[in-house]
Image (cartoon, rainbow, N blue to C red):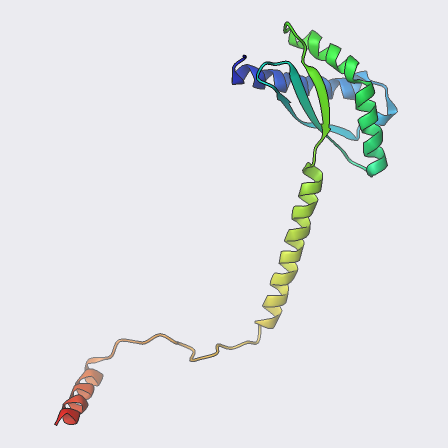
Length: 157
């Protein structure tokens, strides 16, 4: 089993080689400039590599890019093997990354929160406090405490 640093270096190399090959070496129109390699992970034994990618476009373009990556898998694996110089070239598995969908969901939630904050700000613009303007007790001054002590003394008699 390889150490984690070696697996990370190999994953970084695979990501770079696959991205360069997609950009310059493969002439498949399904894999135009719309495919972006976002991450690569390699198993501990360096036998399998998972390549995460995103495709900017609709579902039809995503399906076409997935088919294009599957058809170019052998060429990409050969390029990785030539660049890596390892005994066994890892098998490549391409997985569509959910990053854009997650980012869109987060953006939608943030927009909803901003709208809610704006509504609260509008409602509270002319509002006043329910009780006194200053609801906290203040310490009594010396004059007030003397008066309070006299009235307490009178009540005791």
